[in-house]
Image (cartoon, one colour):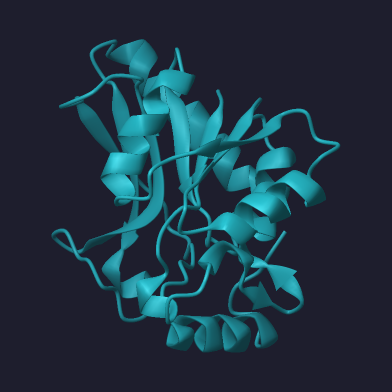
Amino acid sequence: MDALVMAGGKGTRMGNVEKPIVKLYNKCLIDYVLSSLLKSKVKNIFVAVSPNTPKTKEYIKSTYKDFKNIIAIDTSGNGYINDLNECIGYFSEPFLVVSSDLINLTSKIINSIVDYFYCIKAKNPDVEALAVMIPKEKYPNPSIDFNGLVPVGINVLSPKQGYQKEEIMIIDELIFNINTKDDLKLAEMLLKNKDIKIQ
């Protein structure tokens, strides 16, 4: 399975900075995600950048120039869903979609998501997508809550437009998503106290 890292947002809630290259303990947020993807069973890693994230694009091209399986692709930067739809043509099979700010996403979790998707698809070939969630009580101050579940910013999608038959995978581990400066401070504290671990 290939992966798509979404890294073209405006970073509005972060104060209009390029969130993928915001530093946490002297490491860019996107590096945490790419490091785990590289250690996982994912094959190719596409990074969706946009006019909102020109420094991120340059960072990917220079830092990961020796990694032939990391490819920056340009999107218009007109919103997450729009950018995602623009990327679908790069895929011919179901692919993993990951936010660029999931600092404690591990290769073990990535592999378990990929395996889970293929397992349920083998039982029910109609399944086209997978949404990964955690219980609300595991997540400090969630901005979205679906019946007690919080999306973690990881999905598996099929390469087609429109509705997709979706299953939900619930994981019992906090995957920390950084959206605001307060989230960044909280992440620093959680890492310092070893409440979350990074790979």
